[in-house]
Image (tube, rainbow, N blue to C red; front, side, top):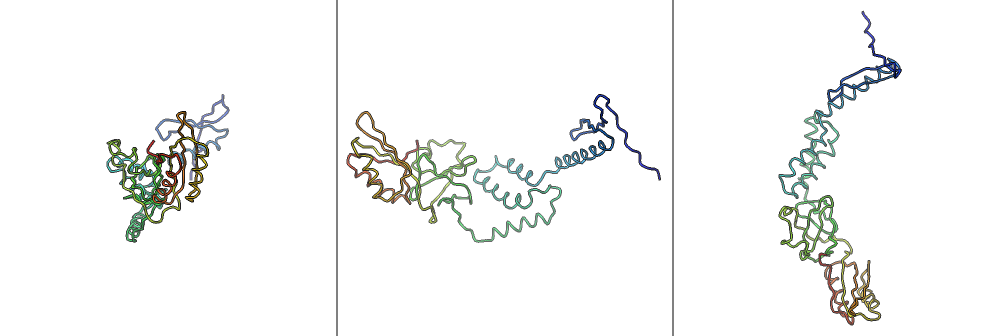
Length: 282
């Protein structure tokens, strides 16, 4: 039986190395170099394996890549809330168990297991999951943050806005930034219904601004009133105005709107105070 011929390679004297040209994954030829024919043979084999894997990967995306592309293609045809729900379910039931597999390697059993998992989950009693005491209509387990422009607390009528990458921002319904007349038509489907639930946080931060006639010990009286109200103060700053008036801004922590109204009443009873207001969408 004849022995297989050893491959022959060109020798590049200027480099002192052997060379072989092979076709790359894009069809263009690439040059490989090595000090010995044996080393070059090993290098060619390794590169050819990489090329085969690259071509296979290009023609057969992973489940995660395919699912991500599918979501991107369908994103412009559905409501934002629907897309968020699709993305959540695809991640849990498709990408997590099958994401690293190539599409060509997915078997009917793989698909059956994913469908069964989703079906079993759907058959369970629906549990309302809240984030920071807020439930977002049509969505579950989504990130929630409270808008700094109006700092809502439990008891306030609220509405949610789906931000890009930061979850749902919760505004008071009377916040100027949530005013229907100021909403952009192209963002209409990003405004969603939200509601408070019982299992809320112990305390919520909210901002107040007090206006009064400037006088000695005004800030001390404000601090005393907050102390008697038994609320935690996260921030407090005072500013005297040239016209003889003063403004005191503060951030307090309350459990709900009822407690906040009690705090406001105590502040309004301070001598010289003529206005106490909540943050209003600035």
